[in-house]
Length: 557
View 1 (cartoon, rainbow, N blue to C red):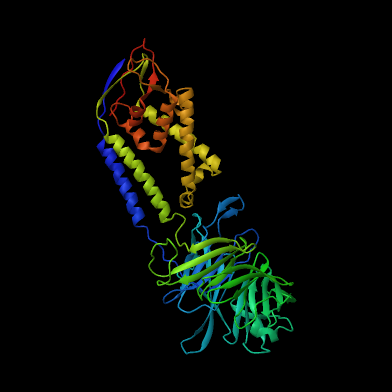
View 2 (view 1 turned 90 degrees about the vertical axis):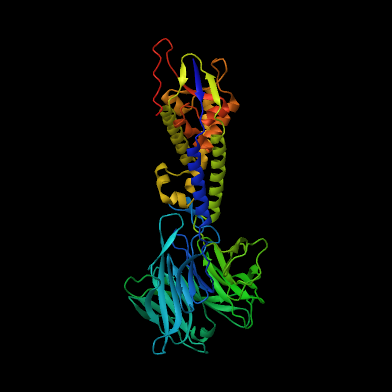
């Protein structure tokens, strides 16, 4: 049986595809770049149970102070062990203040901020606020409550120096000491909106001017370095007292018996990561030395250079990391190869608290999980695919004649569509099983935001093309084609039956799965053949009994 076929170029579908590509370009071009915030002090939530830790920074901007959120980094999360979290270097704006924060504390998803201020009468006040990060359930995106900014708590006493704050499951505590010898040290606990005094060690008052507050997994620690390079330390363990004041247990000791702590006028600060005490000491302009500290002594962990005076450190406890951030102004030198940026830039370094190895060293990221770069790559892929499809669709228009073996006719568009849907579903199931993502979860927005959907689709394309090529070469049918009763053959001038060769099935499946528009045009082509069929010299046919009545041609309308 001979069929004379004239293939007309379908310009309208090609133009529609080109319009879609232009829309993608417009989306990428208009993606707003979030301006990163700035920094001074930080706090990290101590690890609790299996929950990942958050860190927070107070960052100076032009006319305000930004409370910035450092979300948990990507790692395997319970209960399913899937990798979740933000990319290294991610920093998100959570709230802002018009005055400089004096101390931060964090626990779980909550952050507490204290700042010295004056009221309307000119009287000194020490204000306290709180803010909570709420997982939106969409990738690593977080919202913040209250949505309109920080929520006010009961103000702390304004007299004395605020040594620091610490938060735990027992609540928020603040440590206050006057900057004078033999000053009284107060440990205050916030209970039902009121600050209550807790017991303090008997000999701590004479160390008040030197105290540093460090949040720990058990509660907090007060460290007082002396002039000899050694120091005293008091560890406080808090046990939740329900509606009563928490039971506080103190234990004291010595740090750095070998007198290896830095001495001099420059203050030494401390943080705790993974149960390890780490000191941060200035060592010249723009230089900080980080050292692990225990009772015996200290050992240098890392030396950071090129920091600005407002550089700050916050621990990511459960990830065993330290986050260092500082503001780089507009006139500061750029990194090699760095594009010009308007406004200030927050530089970030993330390093291991165990080895000192630098894990990230670049400007902070304020983008969402789907970055402009991701959209740009997606747009580029779509533009290339649409361009190839456009060229192949417009190309042609010549009259083509094929001869089919007796008992075979070109498959109807509807039959081919059902076969493609079946093959696509099988490929999607295979990809979802390989990635460990349930099939129903692919319809959620979270899989797109986290990029999981892109991975599943990419694996699905490869799996579909491989399965299709293998089955079409071995049997002449993909699984979908076998279920709907059609097959792929090689067209020949004399109409002899011939099985498609390996290069033909490989090429047609590669084009079919990577350039779907070329195959979809077979649904509207009067010839019932797509550009994939024409370019690979193949045809999708159905078999019928030539001795019976010849089937009526399908309605192509």
